Length: 270
Image 1 (cartoon, rainbow, N blue to C red):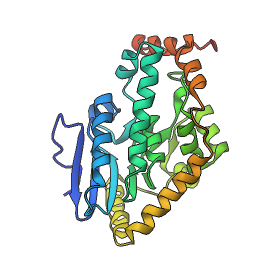
Image 2 (cartoon, one colour; image 1 turned 135 degrees about the vertical axis):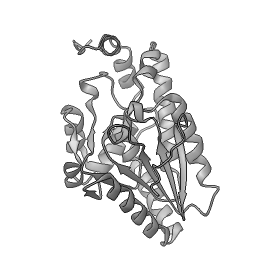
Image 3 (cartoon, rainbow, N blue to C red; image 1 turned 30 degrees about the horizontal axis):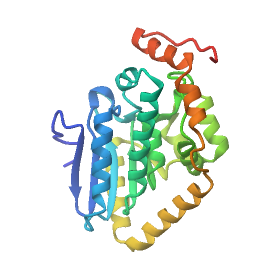
Image 4 (tube, rainbow, N blue to C red; image 1 turned 30 degrees about the vertical axis):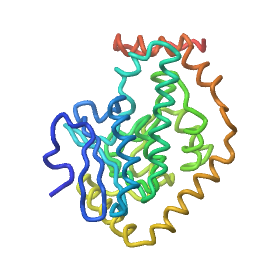
């Protein structure tokens, strides 16, 4: 039985257990699992609670499949539309950082099993995982320069840089073309690419079970040490003016209006 079988409708974050492996499934297949604020809060709380269960030796994140497979097609645009003010947008950014921090602080190794759409917030969540696995159906990218016209926090840029390096990070943002699973594996953002979604789930369980046999303290100390090394290079409160410059811009408001009107935004750099 697949972890994606018989998912309860209306339950947007679903937990499944397979031996020592905790599966967390994003379950909004009609919206390609786009992350709502309610999902974000639930996921943050769930991830924080995992550290109190020593029987969880590995974690896998994946997305429910609708008519097409999907890991996570970014943040829910309805939430972005509701965040009309710069202050609200900044609060959403802070809430997202709480989720990212909770994910990175899970003591057990975390695997992202990525199929179909993995865009924007989906890429960020994958970058905060310890291992990434792709299927051939993966479509991976960061098209914010074509869509909402905002920017990432410095910490999120640092996460991407630690995953693929600065040049590739620029490519990911400057070129909104989505990458295939094979391309993502070739650039080093995924451990490997498998042919099908069924093979992806099986491979993720196998990798997780192997990790579950290893010394938990060694794995935790390694991921925590690398996180501290990365964060040591980030100054305190470094990017508020960058975030505000984007979120208070006419371009950002134009992008939201364009989404509502179902048209392409016209950016002016203001």
